[in-house]
Image 1 (tube, rainbow, N blue to C red):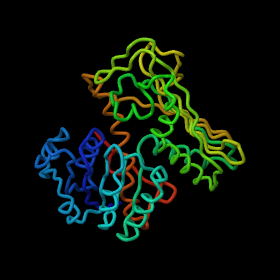
Image 2 (cartoon, helix red, strand yellow):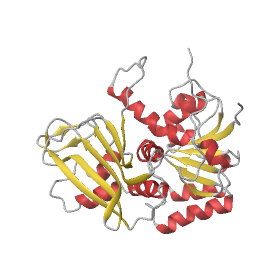
Image 3 (cartoon, rainbow, N blue to C red):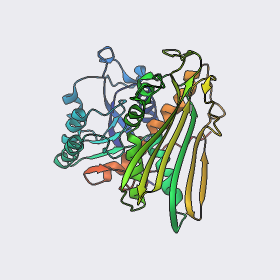
Image 4 (cartoon, rainbow, N blue to C red):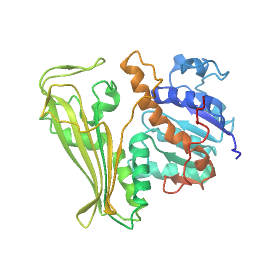
Length: 354
């Protein structure tokens, strides 16, 4: 079996971007031809060195025109949040995008911004796709599981995680961590900070061919009873150290798709939520009912000297679903696409033999 090599530009070299570069550089079907550097201090440096591998002969740059003039097949877009102006510029040039930057369908964006992205795809004859581990890969698993049923009543994806050692205030403060329990803005913060999960609800409903009447967010919070030192920041006593959010897609007042996540920090939580498992429990209520429990563990030869080493596994899981989608995205028609529009994405080129 032969595979066409795809020329890619890496966009940023943060935590997820580093894992992307490492995977792309080792992959037999991808060729890194350029890299965008968001930080001025990274400009001119070899991206292999920036990402913890041997030099690969490609220097990071902040010259967008130079990168797009390379005519890559795809940009691997790994900022924390999407920049619509950047995406429009890339897509208008005719370059496809696979992203981990809080993008599944684009409906979390203002409608005018989503329309700009769609128009850029049409103008450039390019394709925009977003995924990640959750949301993204988790929903793909649920969609696959539902293929065993001749009747589905409800799909639930329940995520549980102790995030004590996940030191990322940039992503955690927006969902409510660290806010006062009596802050009247807390429910809105949780909904706003996790709004991309509403896009994931749409993805699952669309896979079922279902038009939702509404998508709602229901949230609960728990506080720490002592100051909680997380390394780069401190959650003060009486502030949020536990977040439980449910995004629900409803038809006729009945929830048919529900995505939940319960995240806790530390051992001083009140109420003291107990996590049954780390990972996801995916349930397809139907005929038959399908239950799937998904967990994650390092490989047997994994060597770690710090908690940060374990966090790399999360970065890998976030980076790889978009990368595996590149061949399908390059072959897809122009526009914003999801897993429901693509040919089955395949994990080719990564088998490790001894």
